[in-house]
Image 1 (spheres, rainbow, N blue to C red):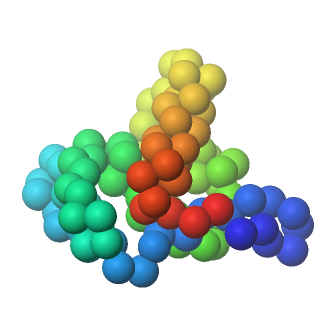
Image 2 (cartoon, one colour):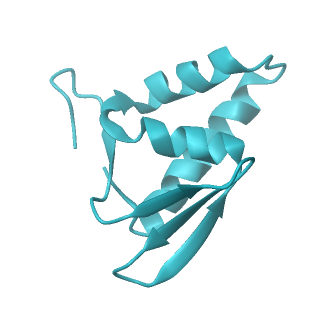
Length: 93
């Protein structure tokens, strides 16, 4: 999915169920019957996979919530999380 500026956008698949468990969240994919446990940061990445945020926007939103010393490490972690979501069939790109 690409926006009018040519930026890749990320969208959660419709049928994925999420349950907030405090410091973690649990995703359930009824199609594959798989359960995925997300830490707080991964949960935030998941929330921004709404079809309205590009990778850069997601990175900026998350880095704005934390005191980040190594920006590249955070960006790499966010990209890896989105890649994992995609590989697991949880988001569309």
